[in-house]
Structures are given as C-alpha cells and as structure tokens.
Image (cartoon, rainbow, N blue to C red; front, top):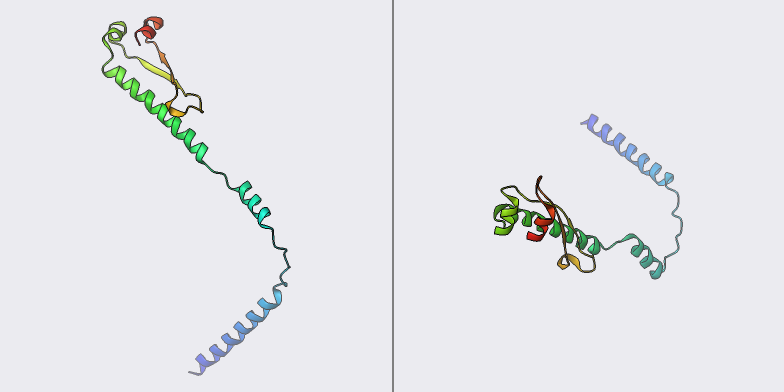
Length: 129
C-alpha cells in the first residue's frame, strides 16, 4: 500500500511539473485583425473551382467513345448489304471519333474516321457508309 501511495504522489508531482512547463512554454496569442466578408469571399472564390464544366466535357468524351465502340460493333456484326459486298468478309475498324464542338455538346455532329481494310477502296467504303 505504501508503494502505491508513494508512486501516486510522485505521479501527481510529475503531472504538476508538466502542466507548469506547458503553461510557461506557450507564448501569448498574437492579436489578429478580422477579415472583411468581401475578402473572405474572394479567397474562397479563388480556392474553390466548380468542376461542372470539366465533368460535362468528360461525360461528352465518354459518350463519344461509347458511340464509336457501338458503331464498330454494329458494323462488324451486321453491316448493310452494300457495305458487306465491298468489305468482302473483312472487318471495318473505326479509327477515331472527332468530338463535336463543345458548344453543341454530345448531341453535335461527330466526324467518324475509319481504317479501310488492306486491299479495299477507302472511297468506295465511304460511299457505302
């Protein structure tokens, strides 16, 4: 029992010294002027960017890429009869889908570039498409 009391007494003294040192080591707070609401608003406006435009561009790009893949699948699985004759069993690959003007969004005109299979006439393929 005496050992416990001695240990508790030492612990209290140690905690008191720690508290005293913590109070002494902290410098007094420096007074800071309050910022006006206009300045605060300007800071937040400069730091926060609305990602709506960026997200819309990303969405339109993904839509256009999906359109290219879908068209390629349609043309590979069941091409129109005129195109099937020109392709003669080879598959048509879409090379690139140029995105429409950003002002028009995904509903705008997409320019689709294709790769003509080896030995095929690209102009004739374009007419059949």
